[in-house]
Length: 273
Ligand code: SF4
Image 1: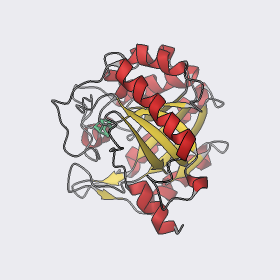
Image 2: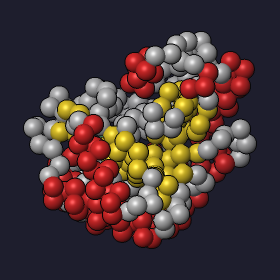
Image 3: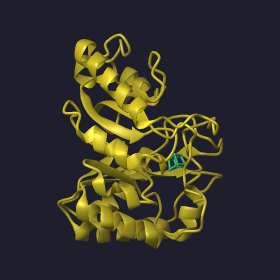
């Protein structure tokens, strides 16, 4: 398989799989293989309204699934994966890139806002074939994650209140200190991968001050538990975004942020996508 075909597979986050409604397979850059997503918030409910959100037409009237419906589909998906390795669904993806890496609570909105989140996590914990559970979260509301049993991929896109407001557009007024404190709490209890989207919108990119402040936040999170901070993943947009003015930042820009971070925290794994 050529690199461009793998890139096409990464860019294709079509969530439609047979007659499944809430569970979908994707070939994920960041998971480095097959990731099975759970869309527990198909109505797109989220406490942010990120300028780069890649969920385009949110169907706010979509039905919220029950835990039973999700668990049924997860088990069905695992059974199909075990039999076919999803070769028909991803005919151009080599088997080595189709290995199941995780089941990710992700989807059209913020998973921690799913009303039955705790029960869902409890039942997922009992499915032994799941290699790893991942929660992809904006880290704004964490009351329900205490029972979670897996890796947390927490969003940190900004270093200043100004960039947080501009890029994530939180629906209620918060400041960057809240996100820092939430991620410090997460890293004190769970393996954490910080997810950072670096992009341009309306002709604005993060300033040196934003980046400097962002690096300081990552340093302080790292100090809480170097062992639990598994990595920082820096990436830019590769799919259609909600706002047309959003543009990816160059590889050089991302590598530049990586270098600044690495200089401050030499033993931290930093990945650029
Ligand atoms: S946190 Fe995720 S789902 Fe919510 S607006 Fe941002 S990108 Fe979209």
